[in-house]
Length: 339
Image (tube, rainbow, N blue to C red; front, side, top):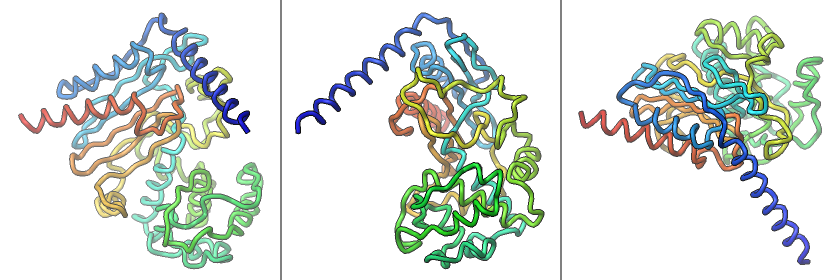
């Protein structure tokens, strides 16, 4: 009975040793930094620079909008330390679950155009969805992680989404809710994107492929350097994170996008709806695996994003890189208010 405990302790020691080996062996590398900082947010720039210089931020970028103005736009470190490729202003990175926010923004655009209604049942747009206890699930329940569809009981081949979308949607529609929809909350980590993406295609009056919907409705109109499926021609500027030298192998990544998303994409009614949290508060957004964060905070009219290629298994909002940046941002806001 002692072996599992001792074994777990042994592997914990190995993991800690490996982390510090990885952390320390790059300490003497020259550091690269670029970008712009509004003088009012000087402390944010200094904090980010410190994180890069001390190796805490191996490679990453931050962006801050204040009252609609880009006040911090910085990047630093390496996209790949093995071959010494520095992070640049056009580097593309993975944001993991922050991509959920992109899907919801697109749903908001659909709502503005009258393609969907958040209060409407999902099955109104996707009739096959109305089975096995899902008949009453609304779009609002789905995007608020209240649908009870946070995992699938039957295997689903992800390649079907590309090779046979109708079969993919049919198999996804078979899942039974794990609780009465609308009565509980459970983070739909891996299934959220599946259901939202199928819903977008079903609700689209033009019946476009998903990549085309994202490009035509969101990326192109707002001049966003984002890809829903990065083409080979852009691979040269993507970050390196999924290698054996990092902490563990990560399951298939879902979206490759640029470090930040332009603000003020939706009109006021939809922003207000999105920012009214079910459990209180006036902020919206997502944290992604490994240290990625993107959110908007309405009280101070500020939006913030952080992206990194050095994946930290600590929950993103408790990540030292992020916590130091967020402290510097709100300290700067306090000084602005006093003046």
